[in-house]
Each structure stands twice: as C-alpha cells, then as structure tokens.
Image (cartoon, rainbow, N blue to C red):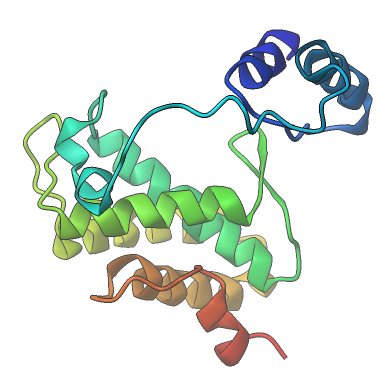
Length: 186
C-alpha cells in the first residue's frame, strides 16, 4: 500500500483513497513526504496535450483486449448493478469490494470497444451481438449460482436489462446508474 501511495504522490496527485480507515495514516505519510506544507501539487503539471481522438483510439493503448476481459466486465457490472438495485452500494465480487466506479469502468470499456471496432487478442470482433451473447452466458451462470436466493432474481433481471442499455445503446449514458433512478428506484 505504501509503495502505491508513494507512486501516486510522486506522480503529482494531491491525495488518494484507501479501502479501509486503518490505511489512512500510511496514505497521509506518503503524501506529507511529497507535499510538505504545500496544499497541492498544481505546480507539477505534465506537458501533454490529449484530445478526443487520442482518448478514443483504443488501438494505441498498451495491453490487449481479451475474451476473458470482456466476460469479466460483463460479470462485474451485472453483479454490481444487481446488488445496487437490491439496495447495497458496495458488493463483494470475486473477493473484492466493488462499487459503482468499477461497474462504470466495466460498462464504459464495453461501450467504447463496441463503438470503436475493437477486436480481442483472439480476433473476435467486439460487437453488440457478441457482448449480448456474453451477457446471456453470464446471466445463465448467475441464475444457477443464485438458485437458492429467489428474492434477488428480479434485481438480476433488471440489472441485465439496465446493463445492456447503458453498455450497448448508441448514445453513451453519462453514468450507468442514472437511467435506473427513473425506472427502478423509488
């Protein structure tokens, strides 16, 4: 944790988040070492110019998109939305505590990949149809896993529909939970 916070402070960040209150002193020490008495690091600006075209150019980024990554994004987003629609703001998913930000990243990546003509490392085109197939597979797995929890099935159905809407519609929704307020939250 300390190495991560040292890296963030050294990169010019003014603060960070921690997963547990007991980590606050570690984070504070890392930032105090860099900030000293300064309130921020606004004087540490990088000289870069990034426009919309660069932000949308998925092929210029390091790494690769994989089928497993697509499946993980679908699974995490649908499971988080199911939890959120059931009234829980954070969810234990794959041994991690996830929140709306993680689900937002997952669905945003999928939206971008489907709209940018991205293919996986294995050569599969990431289309809306492909993502819907993955959604169907993940949904079927969740139905089996949740067979003893019939009270969450309605939330799962709503989560699936909401996910498909915010991840695959033509227009990029500003934030994945916004459409849910009108439809599902009272």
